[in-house]
Length: 273
Image (cartoon, rainbow, N blue to C red):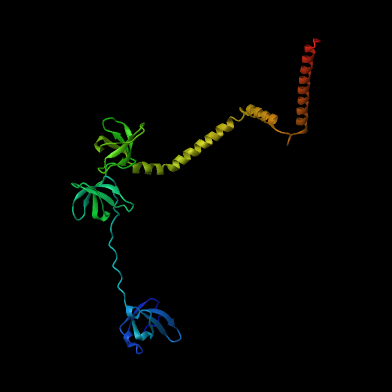
């Protein structure tokens, strides 16, 4: 008999319990262990005996070996659907087109020969042909040669295209366009090039700073002029005594000029000048 104390929650089967014979053969879960009495609380799991327990020594019960749950089979790579994908029912074998994809990634499928699309579980279908177009693809007109961007797809997988230089996107037939750059490729390139772009932006900023510093000498005159304007408009706070005296002299000269002009005008009216 093992001396190891069993963990709480271990499932056991009571073999013999004299005070309550109805417990014999019933399953229970281990509760507290009394070191003093060397007994376990065995809480009965039978619905009719729920909430009752027996105090059992180790030889009064046996451990029930629970079977490990079977490991889940590998479901393989997760299926991904896109609007316009051609799909086939895994059981029915029917072909259809994905018209929408919900938040769980499950497709809404319009089966060939049916009028309405129906929301389905992704596990019910497999992709037999990926959609030619995806939102964000850069496309070119086969006849016109004009470039544009796919903004949406209809239930047949045909693209709505906004041509470069035009304001509105128009619904088109897929056969009229060819994909120049897939949206996924453009996104991955932009992400991989983000660090290079940052470096380039950094260099540009440095050039701007250096050019502004080199032109600082040529703009000193402008800065000094603007400084003079600020001095003329500024108040007396923080100004030197010499500056204040200079302003006072200017005001006196201006007053004398105005006074002289007034005197001359009065004398001319009186005919004395």
